[in-house]
Length: 115
Image (cartoon, rainbow, N blue to C red; front, side):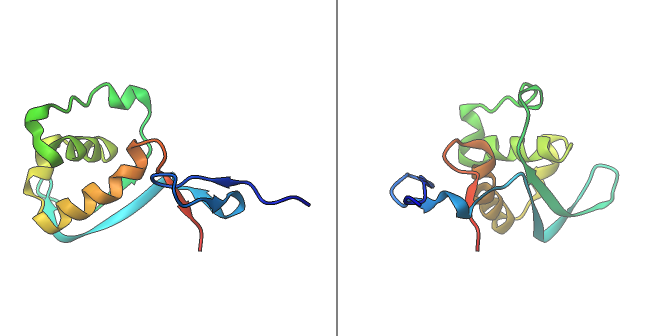
């Protein structure tokens, strides 16, 4: 048998054997500080998942959204929430979520080495 194939992860500088790669389709983030939905119910977690093109068409991130606003719009779409619902997120949750959503939106990520 030959050498196992490898695939780049992140910036491509650290190859991981292809047999130990798992493509993440969905993840759950438990909020450190729950927020309220428009109907008054508690939101205690958010789903992170891969989006389809038809879902992305409704998301319109703008430069004026700043570093986090565009990512939060995609997270809102992943959860079927109005984007302004996430305006009440605590900074701790925003920073964690923005870091965790990248693998679902950017090529070259979304692949995580399995344990």
